[in-house]
Length: 384
Image (cartoon, rainbow, N blue to C red; front, side):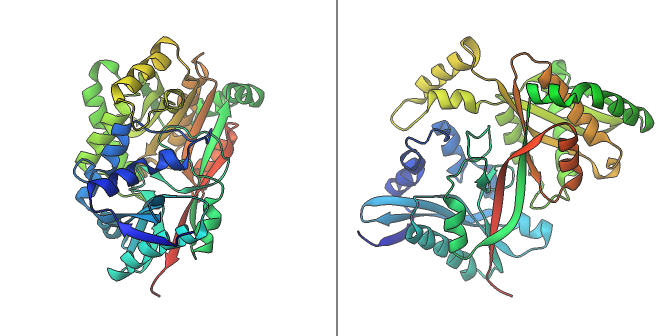
């Protein structure tokens, strides 16, 4: 067997191999959900992805002879280092066969790239910020929901054998209609939620579907303020916020979005979205199939013969000055009730939630939700 070599992606041929590798790696895996080709292209294109305005990085691929066996990106997130006063680099776009030699070669390449630029540690995977797919799955290996990564069960072994250790875990919580009924989620928690809202003068309202432009401006205003102290979080740039709104706008369901106020002050928000991954899994977009064909098939499974019965709650936040007043619990209650009252939805995912966020973990459990997936960030120290 030829030895593994790693080379930087520098031309169109190499980029195509890098771009298409997941379809080769995950072929036949019933859990993997392929993205639309345009989504993956916009993610990897440094001219289109607004995050690359402050990222510095390169793409690499591992080869055995003329066969690609893995990919990785090495990068510096300058905004992260400025915001958190750290001096770390990152790896992302990490995909590889169950091949320790290939995994070692890729991770060593990324590590050496970061070390050569004088940084103290390398962390990941993150492709390419916390607002996008990040983490390696360590349990709950099943189909991922929208905007969450799926990685094979052998990844933790490969990364840990390469000298990386756990930096942080993030949880995904699941609540089914049956589970909510057994837990009496609605009856038991409605009284508690109402009392908390009355005591702290909290009001909750649906998003105003007649003024979506202004509502999304309010969402963008709250988003960065609500998440600014979270581990790993970096405030979005205006272009990133616009891209997030445009992306979620494709799947937006007004009945699943709420704002919280204390008196007349906007204090928090929550938003759920239908799990479009159920459509993508049916369509299975892939290289060689024109995207217009995939989009027509997606329309069929989305609107004409709908297959979506899951929803994901990817966005929730409360401004710091309004925390510890029960707003997060009230928002969570409202969005869960909206999902449970929608006859199309049988299951919901709330993720990701930092393991260090004990308050939110406690709230999710009190509503009858259970941890069903864990993703892990890894780190290797380069300088003491």
